[in-house]
Image (cartoon, rainbow, N blue to C red; front, top):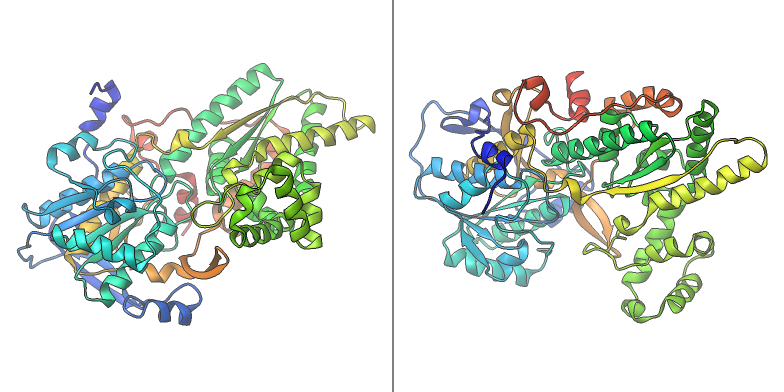
Length: 548
């Protein structure tokens, strides 16, 4: 396979490891933990893996000789930059335990475990994928591990290959499934450990002990580069308003990080919209006001960042979507109706309040709200063209203002959605190091004999050698949420903290950005050069941690 010059150079990069993981390690147990909410219910559902202690690794002054261990690994859910380095770190960590340890990759996600599709990951295979983007080493998938038959079927191949530990690399739903699997295997005495690794570019899988999910740093740097390019073009042509939708269904971390990096004119933060009980028209008026103010200075151009999950955070729309989710979950034959019949069915089935909101929406957007749900029963917000909806409504509002003599400028909109462009990028130095450490750390958790834990590497604003390594029980992150019409245990998503330093930094500057042209052009990810250019973590992480 032909390789680019960058691929060849990156193959030689040696990720940095925390000092504590460079030699023999010892696991130090902390205090017992509890879930973030619904403690009694989570404890009842996870009697064998609830309340476990936090674990920290340190140098072991009296190392013991390790034994060979066979481990399986799964890439689950959407891609995120650095997944290959997690597997590389896991492989190297297992070989450090014993050179005869073996690593098996289950193909195309959790379905590979259930269907017994796998390959052994050997040194030549691993070396081809070090420091590269994507999940193509074994592929990924969205099969949910949640049924006893799946667990038992997977256990068959684990026993056949003498696999005693399984590492699941995924987001909040995938790691929720890892916790359920760990509990089941522990309950039946299967002798299989389950370890999770925090992955999602959305940045919503984090807490005090999981400072960031891997891939967020790289993806936001990729998006910020392109936003900067658009802003440079915008400032050159001076005739378009660019509405840019960014990934982030359940939280606005990506939009906020990109705003901090590129300083657009407008960035909508979904969590703030919900907290202030704003309507769709409130958001439109806010953007239109900025267009008017800039036009008064002759600036008929600008940029607007929109999180893809915005619609679900508008309180009135959130109520509508929640009722739609339950309605569609209970009516399997909905998809067989034609479009007109679907609309009539929804309007007569919804509550009067939600039916009125649904009927007021443009037909295209209303239809997008009824498209097939994702595997977790949620509306696929990435299919809703929120950026076009907003620009169309802003255009209507500006027409009204022009008729009233309050707007004398021009308004032409262009639309973008940045999503898949960032998911498989070559990992930044930060993600390359962080992911390698997460994988290596997972091997240490396996050696420590624990199950139901998530690999945790912390102190990330310091140099990599100063990072702290260990693990936290996955149940510690869980609460009960409604999925497909039922209450289920899931990892609680981390939303943008409106009292947190990153949002406050943004909020203190956005009024100036809205009126003036304060664009920053971040440029492409730098892999070679000064540390201050190449190794910096996200601005979100810096603001969250450097002030503490």
